[in-house]
Length: 256
Image: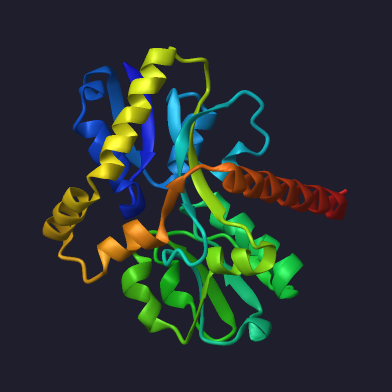
């Protein structure tokens, strides 16, 4: 069995649907996780394939991108935001979402290079959203953002801000393997992903029945999320990882 860790958010539901409704499900152990756990499992080699947050690829030497699909956005994504009660330049502290390393690093890059602000960044645990207020803002990602955005006066969509900064799309996660896989398996794996994307209407219907969520799922999956890992997204990934490397180097210089 090929062990696979997939992010469990709404944006990956088409991938999950495709894998669960194809013959390849008989050959895989499909595990559903938050992004941080997906990255950790991949890093610890507890799985063979992961829908891995891009930031987790920093520092990993042996990985193979095995799909032309990803979780990306070319502009506003709607589910990765900086929530605040004050405008950007009044923010003094930013709480970092414990569920995703990529959004954390993206926020730090934007703060330094685009927003030109110098807040204090703070790691968090569950329920940190309740202490966002005043000059303390917070990064919130995933499905829970849909219900929370109305609680705050200012919402800065990080994919939109990245697009304003670079004029490029953004890749949040891509499919990678930590070893060489059989070509036929990879081909059928991608066919399963494509099948899921082609059946988004069924995914939308199932999600609505399961959650009763008051969110425009069709608009989110078909207009906000951009699944093709094309050349522009690959270039954007490389740029993001270069910026991430700069952040690490700068932090190391401060502590040296």
